[in-house]
Length: 203
Image (cartoon, rainbow, N blue to C red; front, side, top):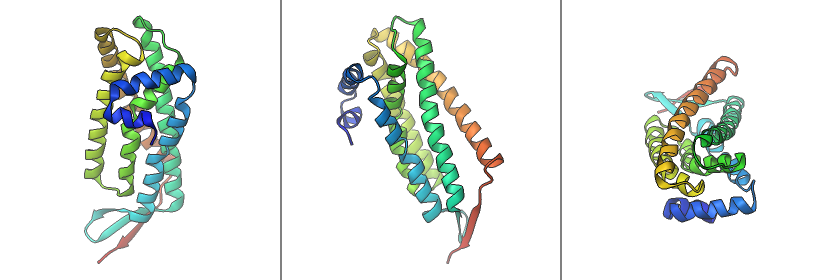
């Protein structure tokens, strides 16, 4: 785990300063962070849905076929990367209302680092469980929100009051983008990819 990622969880204010300096030196440094960490949820989900499975009824384990799981995980990866890029574009568009004039790279990079807790939460996919997913995703949502409100003023070089207002707008748009993309993904998954489930009795 790289130093900026560790600092996001231990010293978030310093982390955003370091990330901004790195961005100014290497405008596309966030790409490795985004493309590599976005692999965590789909890879873990592939393992969890094909080797571990989940239970919908007593004494029954449901798994996905390898082909279906691969389709799901590929779709999830594309959705994650596209969602972060779209969120970055929205941040760039909304910044016109404020004094800051960040570049598209800066905005996408900021979005990529802000959703880092969601990337790491993908580890829970190794053990598919509704309640575990709710707990882990809830915690990731809270910490990503914290990173957003702490980081936006620092990263965008905005006054604190202006940065908090901007962060609130970004949070609202981010929620809308998240819901829209997830709905589209689910519709594609069930209507176009036709998943294949494998059921087995245990005990």
